Length: 98
Image (cartoon, rainbow, N blue to C red; front, side, top):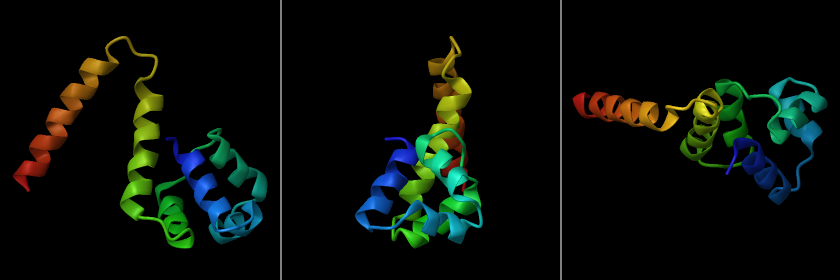
């Protein structure tokens, strides 16, 4: 699932309007609408605010948000799969070191 789809689903389940969330994020409604449609990326700080407003698990939203960013970066790369495996090894190694 994409980040925009998830926040739209959560927003609708809470019966909130886009303009309500946009105001809380201090952006205009068209900008918020673009985030839901995947035409614009939310900032990390906005993801944290949205998790709170939508009563969603912050780690779940951050994971989806970050996955969208990674996908956008590698989607057209021939070696994307191999690069992701190398990155996964690095992340796993760094996590184990801590």
